[in-house]
Image (tube, rainbow, N blue to C red; front, side, top):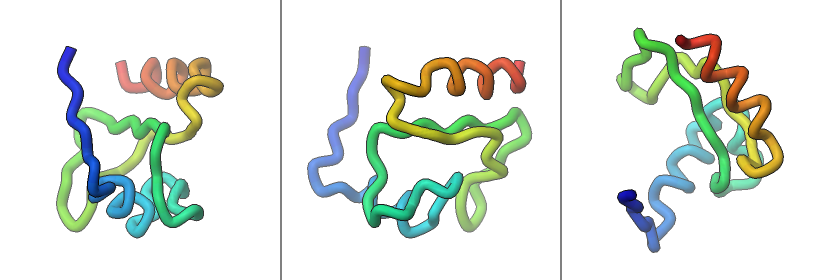
Length: 71
């Protein structure tokens, strides 16, 4: 398993500022998931988002359903 620690919170701040998937309301995003389809591209920001939510531990069913739509 590989884990990338972002001690400065760069990604959490970026995704909150971009309000990707409507999850940027708190000013910092963590413990969330984003699902992208096979044609998603990262231009100004990644997208389109096929699903998003959090916290991950309590949204496992929703995450699985979002992933299944992309298979």
